[in-house]
Structure formats: structure tokens, C-alpha cells
Image 1 (cartoon, helix red, strand yellow):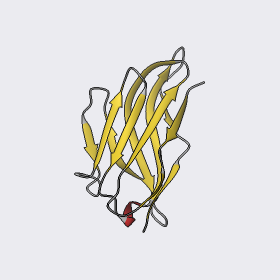
Image 2: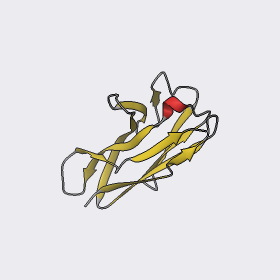
Image 3: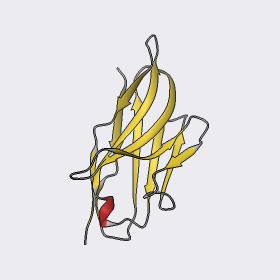
Length: 120
């Protein structure tokens, strides 16, 4: 069974940094694009950053220049380095991936979601 397990959330002061990780495990044939979503209170879930298998990246305007998404294909892990954090970055962050399981069909998988709170 394929699953995504996130780590690295928590409380940080404004201007601080956090590094999130999301590891895929299970019987996996191929992982395509990977994404980090976030859902702030009272707002719709949005894509904060995405990365293709060949490491082409894209960012939400609010994240560009402060967030960096990267991936280690050998470890089936994607990372999100968040710097210069602001209170408006407070949200539940979810990782997401396009995965083809061995012997199965393509589908989108989600991590469990982790709260990131930026506050003094």
C-alpha cells in the first residue's frame, strides 16, 4: 500500500525557517509530479509549490523567493524549505504526488497534513 508520510511542521517565529519533508513508501513503480498544498483558515486549499520528476519547479506568487521545493528520487522524498516565514503562511500543509503503484494505475496520493504556525 502506497502512502505519503510528512514531517517537519510546527511553530516558528516570523522571519524564521522550517523544512518539511514527505516520504513516499510502499510498492511504487513511478512517481511523477509532486506538490505541496496549503490550506489557511477560511481559505481554499492552494498549491504552494510543485516539482516535476525532472525537477522543473513552480511556486505560488506568495511563496516565490522564500520557499524552495526539491526532491530526492532515490529516497522517494520531496522537501519544502520555507524561509522568511510570515504569519500569513500559517496553514495546514499537505504533500501530494502523482504515483503509479506496481501492478496498479496512476492516482494522486495525499499526505496526512501538518500544521505550520507562524507567530511570535
